[in-house]
Image 1 (cartoon, rainbow, N blue to C red):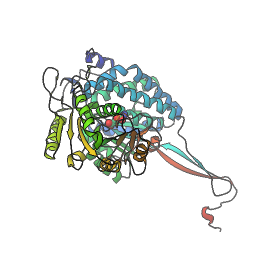
Image 2: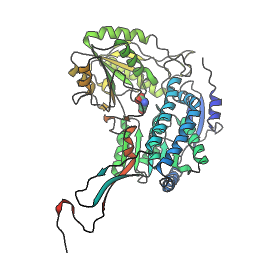
Image 3: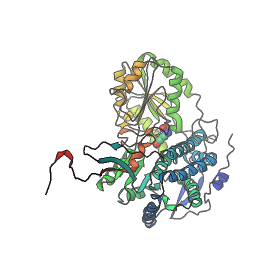
Image 4: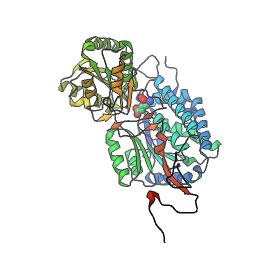
Length: 503
Ligand code: UN1
């Protein structure tokens, strides 16, 4: 049952729903029912320039606050997120279209990264090094960078920002965030929560800046030498243009771009687990995660059996309003995404694909917008071009293999390198997959699917995925600058490498 009143959710999240539609506002329509959610003020170039200036000024205050005290602010943000988890989760679901469970999961991911960042704020460790010179001490220390620019995508409208912001903040940076123009309201809601915590603690507002608008703002950021680090999540096309602009000014970037993730299902698989992992990976967030499972590479001996079970299981998938918890799959983000989904299916047919679960646009009273589509399954030759592309939609490709080497070659033979998985109970197969001869991806899993990474690990991938790492592990190092220090406490000046120099 749908029991969520979005207007009350907006009120509790302090979204100004009365803003009129003008040439300076940006409207957000829900893919769930096509209704207008609210307008936000679009950031003009002048306002952008001003905000970066403010963020820079705020940096001079924020960086003076000891890291554990910055962690305390992030702890309070985590508490605010806990208090608003249901509302924010529902808004994520309504504005983006993912299932309510996944909306809650996204907010949980934000809470988790705040917890991680709080601990990290006391663990920004540097190494000490043994000097080759007598009475010298060497060590390294980490300093903040300055203003960190965050460009995020519609599919995880808030979690990916929080991975970046929570870590950047405890490291001593200020942030300027450009969310996707398809999901401006969830961003506004986060900004409200963060600003309330800042006000209570007398922290400058510009420690967290939010700018709303289209790709032109991203271009401004990428070219802005006042922003030493740009962390961008989105398409490979966007990433390449951001990377070029940032590199031209020798700035730093963290790129988290497209994925084309496969699960290898061997003859030693626990079929029930493999089935569930494959389906969640393929249809979760309606196939719009960068970690979504796009390809199943199945051993020939179990191929037919697995295919039949998959086809049967797909009949049980419930598509519809994602706020209704009985549904597994909501709509795609917009009509353009639907067009891409439909044209990809046509292309599959042209390239010799055989649909074993038909796709198509859904209409009728259960589908209150024109963005609901049927998750589909296509048997494809692994060499077909279309399977080397990332289509952000619930289209799952089936491929057959005979040897594990062949399966790994198929898996790796795509331009992207984000996530991968093998489903096997055979130790040798699992270890081979994880070895240097195995998966070439940033994420390699055994007996779980390709999506749903925990925040504790470094998140990101290789090749056209961009090479960046965000979130847990030591990803924080990318948000700081490393300073190597040598201190001489002797009365002499011995030179390294034994060089003699005297006057
Ligand atoms: C993304 O799709 O950009 O691993 C991020 C996952 C989520 C994050 C996905 N924790 O699927």
